[in-house]
Length: 248
Image: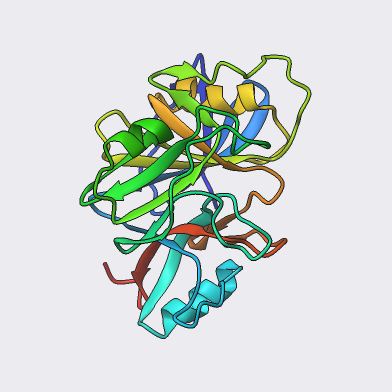
C-alpha cells in the first residue's frame, strides 16, 4: 500500500524509506501522487513506438515489448503532448536519436503558452530547460521531450497562472531537483488549476524548474502499488525500466 505523505507548511513529514517510489501527497486541500526517481540509480527512459513505427499507446503494450528484452516497467506516465497520429508535438529524443525537432514559436493550446520547456535526461542527471534556452545551446540528451507550459522556471511560477483560475483538470508533470539528481513525476488525483499544480512542485517538492506534461489524458503506472491508469491511447511514455526478474 502506498504510504501517505502529509505536507504541513510546505515541508515533507519524514517517513521510513519504502520500496515503492510513489507516495500519496496532500497539498493545499488536494490529493496528488508523487514518484521520486534517483537518476543515478534508476533507468529512466522515453518510449513512443516499436521498431516498425507502431506507437505503443499504452503502458500494457510497452510492458509487453520490454518483457521480450528481459525488462519491465517500474513507474511510468504519459510523457508529453502529441498529434492525432501520436507523434510528438515538439522535440523528442529517444536513445540519443532525435525523432522530432524543437518548436520555439508561440502557438495555441497549453503547449504554445510560452515559456514552455524540455525535459532532458543525461548520464546520471536530468534537467528541465526553457525551450528557447535549450535551442540556443542544446545539451546532449539521451532522452528528451518538449511540452508546455513551464510550471516553475527558476523558482518562479509561470506568469500566466492565476491563483483563482477556473480551468480544473487532472494534470501531470515533471520536476527536477536543483542538483539534477532527483526527478519528481507528479499527477493530481483530482482536478486542480495550473497555479495549484505548479505550487506543488515549487512549495512542496522544492524544485526550481518543472514542466507540465498534459491534462485530460494524465495517467500513471506504478508496479509497486499496482496502479495502472487506463484511458485514451498515449503518445510518448516516460518511465523507469528494471530487470524482468526484479533483481537490481
